[in-house]
Image 1 (cartoon, rainbow, N blue to C red):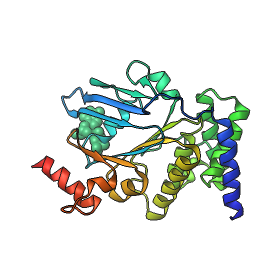
Image 2 (cartoon, rainbow, N blue to C red):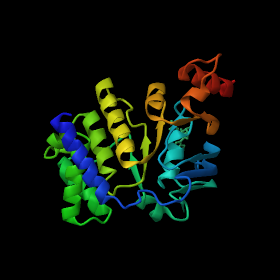
Image 3 (cartoon, rainbow, N blue to C red):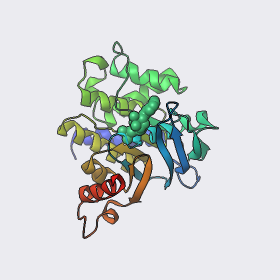
Length: 271
Ligand code: ADP
């Protein structure tokens, strides 16, 4: 074991100690959608009644073409978008009726990181922790540990605005974990990143799942990403869930790869 992975392991272990034990109360499924729908004010039916369940500790991918309703769906789960139909529960709390309870239990990492250009990485992380009610000293320690866990200690003192897109995305991911949430939502976590940065995010996410038992729900239109990260995938098209299952179960003799299955299901929908 290299010394850097030893430090990351020690940091993980200390973080696990900080997280509430047990990690996840027995609430049944981590995420439940029941006929969840969103029609925007202009009449766009972005999500037309999606029902699915994500078990605690599972990694679930919402896969679909642009405009399918992925961001709207994950936005509703993250309490950023108000549903207009159906219901959803996250960590046992209704997203519409109990948004504050939901927010306490989730991390949300987005494509466009709206971070303060003047703050350093560690200031940004500490601010996120303070927003979640952590005391300053606790927030500082957690920021240190999380940056170590994601291998970003060297950028702690650098201004966020000066970082590359991939590094900013990893900083945003680490910041979304400051309150050690059991469930993390990611909207297109590697969109627009080069392969090396994409790989670094994948490794970070896999390690977080393995080490902290976090439930992940992510959107993507990248088949490789879905295969690399997800236990189960739901393919959405035009606001509806077309099919769901493990990556293996979605493939068949007629569609031997996930890409072929995706084209099969989304084309059938388009026909
Ligand atoms: P995806 O994430 O799969 O690309 P989105 O959820 O972003 O899909 O969008 C689904 C549909 O809803 C698209 O037709 C999009 O143009 C529309 N849409 C998204 N946000 C809004 C909004 N704020 N107002 C009106 N229409 C929207």
